[in-house]
Length: 150
Image (cartoon, rainbow, N blue to C red; front, side, top):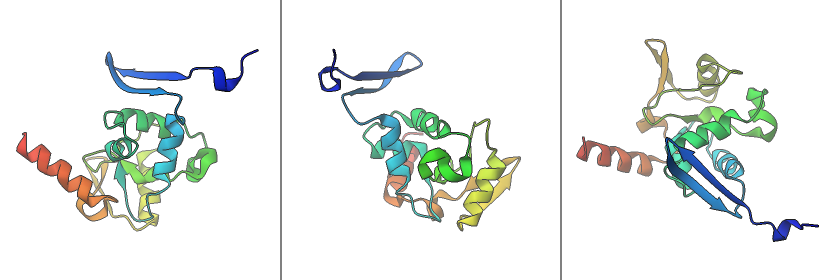
């Protein structure tokens, strides 16, 4: 008989043939994502990359998206976990949801209810990250790095 404490738990996540995250015996990655997203206050947004960085997996932005998508079919309640998934958008400030249960229009509506200004442009929805970013210091550091290397 195996006891859980004697079982070695290892998870390695690959994307395009590269390791983006490796965990051994740690709290479930998705649970870490949910805990961090729950910290985002109403009226603010964070990016997938910010959330990944805040849980010490900076190269796992896409996996953060997978975690949020897996919340379930009751999107207004954050699945069964009460996670405010709508507050997470991409690094360009665009709502980039790919979820069969909800639309980007719905995510924009939820953000607007919370006081976030969402602008529609060519069928896409954008949020001003300078104004509504939860962690402005991280946003400005990333922009400075991006501007230096483009």
